[in-house]
Length: 272
Image (cartoon, rainbow, N blue to C red; front, side):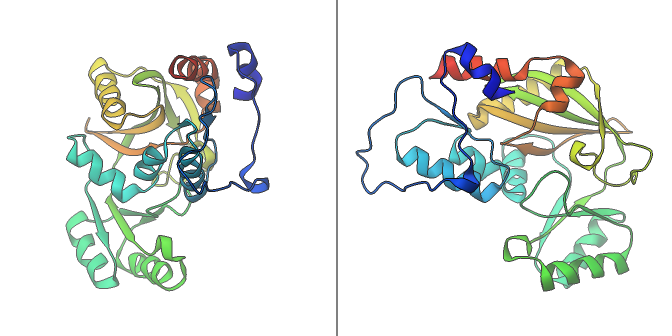
């Protein structure tokens, strides 16, 4: 979508595949500045690749959207959670643990069911809904024994009885689209509602105070393009569950009709 629209905004687009490109780390800070209209839109799903490539491009005096700092902050869920709390945004009660003993102690505070998720990742992958102590022991045993080093953090969250699972799309500091993610009949009602896991989008109208909150988040983060997940419980409580610095938007376009590629390219052109 972005590539097809870029030409009409005066850009000469080029797709650079991370899997087929070697990115040279500059040896000095005197790398020439690219033309005023040049910018790299980071669309690499991998947290590590996106952050590292953004850092290399920025060291070469290239403009990258989102920046390496934004990717680093919002690509790591524990850091995201801490930043949100520090800045006064509502978050789900969470605990970080590094052993079975501390995870079991956390479960006594959070209660069952609870959610165990990787501290790095997306698309609802490896998110586990744990119903009792035996299940928690099994999940902890796997994570500590077999998961890669980057996933050995035990990130536990209180389970939220969800009424609406809203993905809001923000360009610059402006919310431009929102949709609710609805479970299909085959999905576990306690599990993640990610589109990548089969959820279906439906149009959702955010309340003005929620729009203001989300736009405040984007402003404080100095971000260019974010997908923010807002959970609304059946009792009306609201939590920011996740902030995505490299978010997909095809479902948002389909459901809302908002031309997100055009909005993003307009924003990039204004900032270039």
